[in-house]
Amino acid sequence: MAAPLEKVLIQELNSLRQKNLYRSLRVLEGPQLSQAVFDGRSVVNLSSNNYLGLNTHPKLVQAAIDATAKYGVGSGAVRTIAGTMDIHLQLEEKIARFKQVEACVVFQSGFTANAGTVAAILSKGDVIISDELNHASIIDGCRLSRANIRIFPHRDLCALEKILQETQSLSGLKLVITDGVFSMDGDIAPLPEVIELAEEFGAIMMIDDAHASGVLGRNGRGTVDHYRMQGRVDIQVGTLSKAIGSLGGYVCGSKALIEFLYHRARPFLFSTSHPPSVAASCLAAFEVLEEEPVLIERLWENTRFFKAGLSRLGFNTGGSETPITPIIVGKGDLAMKFSDDLFQEGVFAQGIGYPTVPDVKSRIRTIVTATHSREQLQYALDVLEKVARKLSII
Image (cartoon, helix red, strand yellow):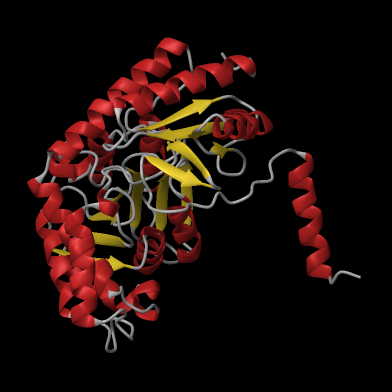
């Protein structure tokens, strides 16, 4: 007889299978490329966050090799004991200069950067005002903080203003937080207007720029630079795991903010620091961003080409403005069938359903990169049309 936990888990898994929502992990064989091998099948890869193809860039690969030879494969400790290496500080100084802020601290992931920062600076009696489509790491950080959480409908400035008015008389800190680029819909936050409201009501302003880092702004500096809002965002979070091509997350802001996180951010305090090879590859990535702007130009050329093709075919792509382009089909089982059939035809675009998005907004999510060729993108469009017509999606 199965143990109580095992019985419950099996029931839940069987329920997913009955709803055609059960997913098996696709296994990547070889590097994460625009044309890659998953489960033994060569496919056009529209599911990677590797926006600029930096994960295989020769400069990053060589930097990782050199750092491993010099420092070894790991740091051996948390940052606050014996795990702060000179290469970690070099990376943080590099990011701070790149983002045009006083200071920066690197976390083990973008998730821990968001969750750890929100939970560190807010507490019971404070108020967090968050866009309803913010990333799960923000949601978890809000819950861990024990602050009063207020959610405003996606990009709804009137609702944001109303909440700020309603909470103005409350004691404690107020934090307004938004993604820069929203990870499931690919739209961009109306940051100037959000900042103006935060400033008007004396709230702290925080942005998660995971999907804007390396994509928006000059040389990929992100949403703040895209809107020319430097100096008006208190906390900027970014990732080293997507366009930067490696692993980790970071928080940028004032020197006081970063020193406070040294003392209170639990992921920083209780996790071993990055392997030196990771720090070195990230350092090289920021150099590439500054030296090779053509990569971002190619990313946006490919994005425009692909979006135009989807529009001609009549797909519902929501309000996407970035290389993240959802194709919304409206039912979870249909989205998974669409994804599976595309894969069999040589295109990998992951199905996304509940609880990541509401069931009625189930979709496949496509992401274009700088390294896709026009031939690959046209092939993907042709396959998308063929499968979508078979399934009566268009």
